[in-house]
Image 1 (cartoon, helix red, strand yellow):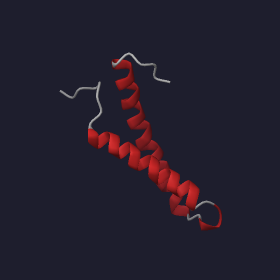
Image 2: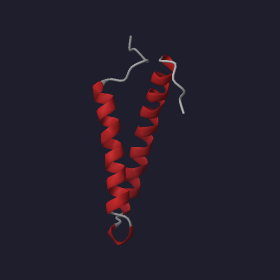
Image 3: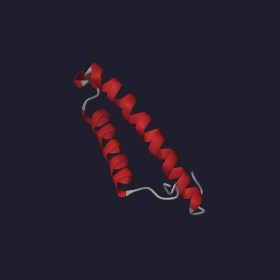
Image 4: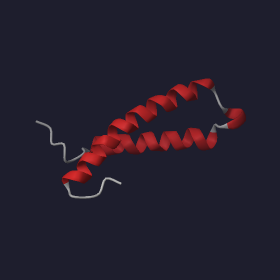
Length: 68
C-alpha cells in the first residue's frame, strides 16, 4: 500500500522538471517564437502538475499544514 502522506523523490523531481519546462516555454518561446505544439505540451504539463499538486496537498494535510 502506497503512503499518501509522502511524495517520492521521483515525484518531487518530476514536479520540478514540469515547472521548469513550463516556465521555459512561457519565458523563452512566447510571441514570435511560439509554435503551435507548445499549446498541447502546456496542456499536458498542466494536467500532470494538477495530479502532483493533489499529492502535495494530501502530504500537507497529513502533516497538519494548511494546503494553501
